[in-house]
Length: 135
Image (cartoon, rainbow, N blue to C red):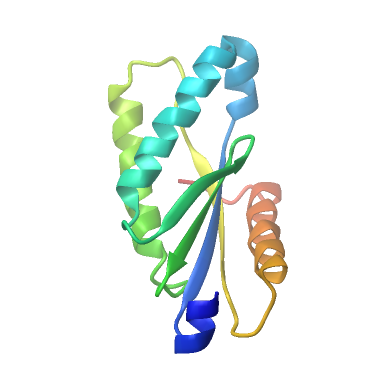
């Protein structure tokens, strides 16, 4: 955020929630649930740039911080992740498929990180509530 303020550059936050994770974890157990999280983390890492910061925020939610990226430009790595998840679903041999819902919000110079995180969470949960098609 300090860099974005100093350089007046873009900084975008993306939150990702795995759809149906609780059902997988409950039905197939914690070991399979942990495998899902690890597999998705690999897909996530391979879909975003090295300078982006991706981490598990908790449960089945991930957060990606994308420096020098506008909300509009964040669509490209989300599409790459979508393709990677589709490929995984076709080749995993699992009885379930992965899917995710995401929200995106840009940091506004001088604002608080909590404000951006609330905005990105609000978008994510609005998509989940409105049953917007997910990748």
